[in-house]
Amino acid sequence: MGEEKPPRERGQPLTKRDTYKQQKI
View 1 (spheres, rainbow, N blue to C red):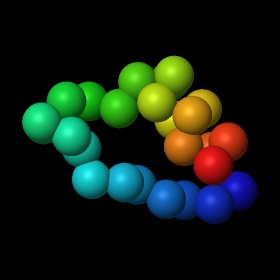
View 2 (view 1 turned 180 degrees about the vertical axis):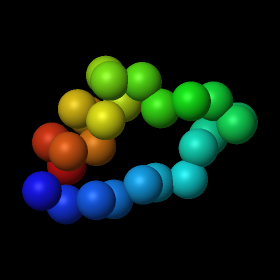
View 3 (view 1 turned 45 degrees about the vertical axis):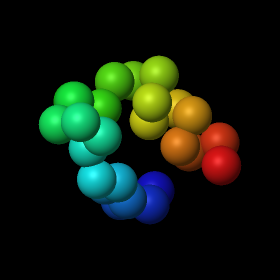
View 4 (view 1 turned 135 degrees about the vertical axis):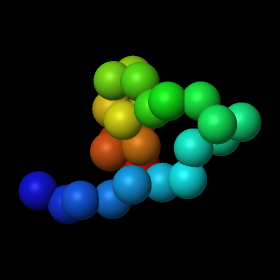
């Protein structure tokens, strides 16, 4: 389980969809 917290874009909270997309990368 990698704990990677990418910087928020435009100060928007990361949604589950964003996290899933980033984990796919």
